[in-house]
Amino acid sequence: MNYLDIGVLEKLGRDDFLAVKPYPYFNPRGLLTDAGFQALLDNMPPLELFEKKFGYERRAGQAPHDRYSLEYEPGMPVPQPWQEFIGELCSDAYRNQVARLLGANKVEFRFHWHYTPAGCDVSPHCDARREHGSHLFYFNSEEDWDPAWGGSTLVLDDGGRIEFNSAPALEDFAAIHEVASIGNYSALMLRSDRSWHAVRPIECPEGRLRRVFIVVINPDSLFWKVRDRVVGKQVQRF
Image 1 (cartoon, rainbow, N blue to C red):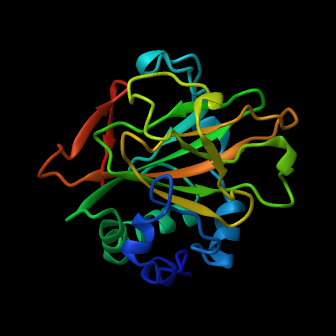
Image 2: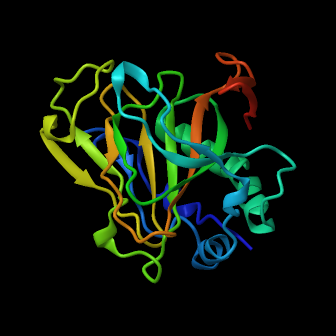
């Protein structure tokens, strides 16, 4: 089975990607094949594999991003479709398209899942400067998620006014663009000190979870070590 329809990325011109405002991002439907999306959705990693990350301090006084988190490592007992999908993400076909769009000579990846319960949100932030970008794959379907519960990524336009090392509120932004995230959607984002994004507080019933799989895109090991130490443990790059 093919999980990625790589042609979706191949058809996107880099100039078109860079022209997107307030900063470059791409939010297509169907980057995953329908069969691939369904196989992954039906085989989400179980919550017992996850670490509860609540109340962690963030940069410049930003509110914590409370969630359950799972960092991928080789040999981890995640379901077979996920092992196959991660293998496909490590292919030259995907890696080369991401590098082309983000303007990198070469990129390396880290992979993790975030499950977010009711009452939690993602405060406005830009990703760390050591990152080149991120690719979010959303795993809530129309059948299991009501749009009224929230959970969509918000692309925030700061109008060039807000300092990277600050803790703004949503009300401080000039405009808010909601990313499509229910069903077979993903969002590729180019990181900068203006690439603010957030998620409003989630209002789903108890036991439901906002589920996202994230490809963290880093410069290659000419600039960064292949092994990073993150929250006290080693995390593999690919």
